[in-house]
Length: 174
Image 1 (spheres, rainbow, N blue to C red):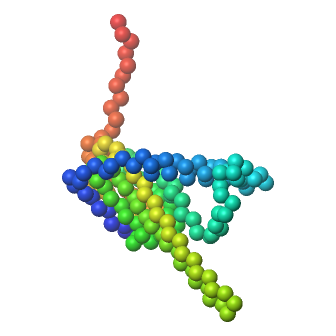
Image 2 (tube, helix red, strand yellow; image 1 turned 60 degrees about the vertical axis):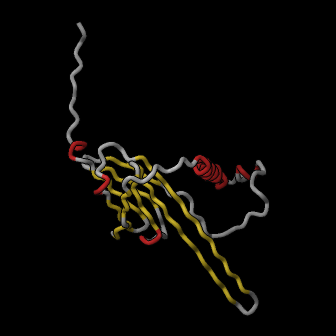
């Protein structure tokens, strides 16, 4: 697994809220949901509402917001993100003000020369996902690795957070 550097920023100002970005992400997720229905012999939902312009450009390049899973173990949390086609140099993982941010950028260039025609295509896409760190994470020991298009960020728990949960017996009140 190739290591991806994790940058821990101390005493950095809190990031400004990005309401438009959240709406854009919500819109993309809703579009993907509706597009799934177009594969069952039905016209695409957005097209039936005439929301999509008639001049859409068809390309093999697409870079949606990556799917992310967050799991908790006894000693750590793991954040895994599917990033097919990206390399370590294309990914930026940072921690600032109890927020984990994963950014990435992908570019695509294709040039086809023939005696009858010349086609040149370029496409660029980027994403950013941010997550509030849970209590009990040792931010200085966070690591990230990339293997087969899957980024795994390991967030180790502090010794205090790893202590077993104490069960409190509930007794009938007198």
